[in-house]
Amino acid sequence: MGVRLWRVHLDRPERAGEPGRWHCLSGAERDKAAAFADPLARRRYVAAHAALRHILGRLCGVPAARLAFGTEESGRPCLLARTPRPDFNLSHSEEWALIAVAAPGSRVGVDVERVRPDLDHREMARRIYQPEEAARVCAATPDAGLAEYFRLWTAKEAYVKATGAGLAGLRDVLVRPAAATCEQSRAGSAVSRSLPGSPAPVRWLDVAPGYAAALVTTASTPAPRTG
Image (cartoon, rainbow, N blue to C red; front, side, top):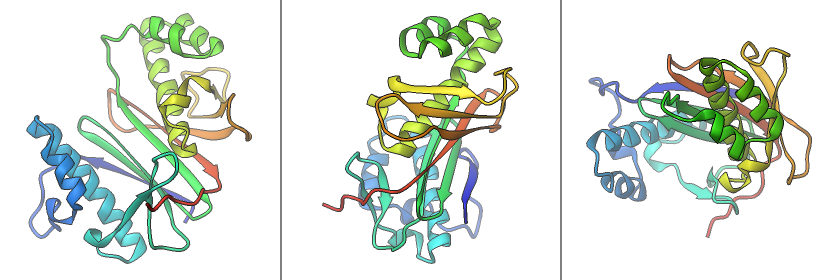
């Protein structure tokens, strides 16, 4: 299967004949959805998690509502009661979601972010990025620097999601574009200075205007935590 990727428009209304979104969610997912004060955020959460369940259900040959999820030691979600298990990852930002599924034996992380023009990207890069990354962001024109800041952020997020390092490990991640001109590169690598292992491949994705996104794959899947 390799790695497969789905782009989901969360604001698309349900169509007649489609499986219901709300009814395929677990009780815990419904409780979390109900806790959203903003109706739009609630609808988007439901649409994203229902899409994940329908995709995994089709791939695994299991009804979406019957899929069981657990967590790894890091808290990363995983499928239960399937051997071997495909690995998966979900990311959503405003109206768009990305769902990635990898074959057993591989791990995948994906991230999509709405680009925020009001962000002081140069100051943020100086504070939380590796020196060479911050230098690339600060040396670029304002528009190119903002785009590069979010490209790096999505790659870092995708990397820590693939590895299970979590946001606490994000500052240790170094991302390098494959090409000399970072604005034109669609591929690169990411590595953590605090985790063992070689660099993982990064692929930057086109989702929609005003969004940045990245996909990272690594090898080996730890055993899930079921309790």
